Image (cartoon, rainbow, N blue to C red; front, side):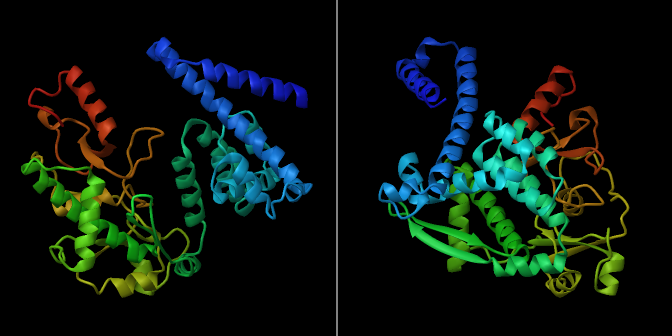
Amino acid sequence: MLDAIEKSARQLRRDLEAFDPALLSGPQSASVAEMLAITEKACAAARARAAARAVELGVHRVQGFASGVDWLARQMGSTNGEARLAIETVAVLNSCSEAKEALVAGELSLAQAHEIAKLQSELPGSEHELVDLARRSGLTAVRDAVRDRIVKRSDPGQLHELQRRRRHYHHWKDRYGMVRLSLAFTPDVGVPIVNRVEADAERLRVAARRSQLEEPFHAHACDALAAMLIGDGPGRVARAELVLVCDVNAYRRGHAHPGEVSQIRGGGPLPVERVRELSEDAFIKVVLHDGVRIDTVKHFGRHINAELRTALELGPPPAFDGAVCVEPDCGRRYGLEWDHVEPLAHRGPTSYENLQPRCWPHHRNKTERDRAAGLLARGPT
C-alpha cells in the first residue's frame, strides 16, 4: 500500500507540474478544478489520518519536535491551528462513520467534517443531515447549520451566560502594519453595533457614489466603525439599532415556556428578563406577537415603510430567525435586497406577502427571468 501511494503521489505531482490551463476550454478548466478539489480533500484526509498515527507513535519527537502539532504544521507549511484541526478531526471522527466515509472519499473538507463531528458528539443524530448539506454546500453553510442547531436546543439563560464567558478581544498587526481586530460580543451588544456600522457605511457609500469616490462596502464599514469609536459619527439614528422579538405571554410573565420565541433579530435567543431590561431603551424596538402571521397594509409604490421593513427583516413566523435569501441552498444573510414576487411593473404590491429577500446575484437572476417573461415593461423589480 505504501509503495502504491508514494507512486501515485509522485505521478500526480509530475502531471500537475506539466499542467497548463491555457490549453483547456472553459468547461474543461471547470472540470479539472472540480476533480482536483475532490482529490485535494481526499489527500488532506489521508494526510491527517497518517499524521495522527505518526503523532500517536511519537515520531515527531524522534524528529526533534516537542509537539505533534508543531511537526505537522512544518510538514503542511501551515499555522499550528490548521495542523491542530487536522489531528483533532481524526480523533473526533471515530464515532461518525458517515462523515468519516465522506471525508475519506473527498466529499467533505477537514473543516466541514470537524464541525459535523463536534455537533454529533453534542447532539447525537445530527450527522446525516449535515453530511448531506456539506456535500452540496461550503463551510459557511455547515457552520451556520451547526450554530442554528446549538442555539435552538440551548436554554436561553444558559446560552446567554455561556456567551458572556466567551467575550473576546484581540488585536495584532498584519504584514503591511495594518491594525486588525478579533472581537466577540454577546448578541445583545454585538447586533446593534453591526447594525449601526452597516447603516452608517451605507450612507457613506451613497455619498461616495455621488462624488464618484465609491469604494467596496467593507472599506466604508471600516470608516464608519472608526468614526463611531472616536465620536465623529452622525450620532444615534432614528431607526432602531436592535429589534427584539418576544411572545407577548412570555413578556408579561417574565420567562418563556417551550415553543415561545424570545430572541434578537439576527442574533438568536435571549432570556425574557434581558428583553425586558433592554426594552426601556428608546432606540430598541420590541416586537410582541402571539404566534400568528404579520399583516401589513398593501401599497403600490416602491418605498418600503419602516413598519413593513421591520416585519420583513424579522424573517417568517413563528421562528422569526431573520431574513435569508429564499433561493434553495443559498443561505446568504448579508447584502439582501427585497424582491417583488409579482413585479412592481406588473402591478405587484409592496406588501409583506409580495416581498421576498434575495441576495444580489439571485435578485438579478430573478429580474432577468421576469424580463424574459415580459413582466418588466417599466424596469427592474
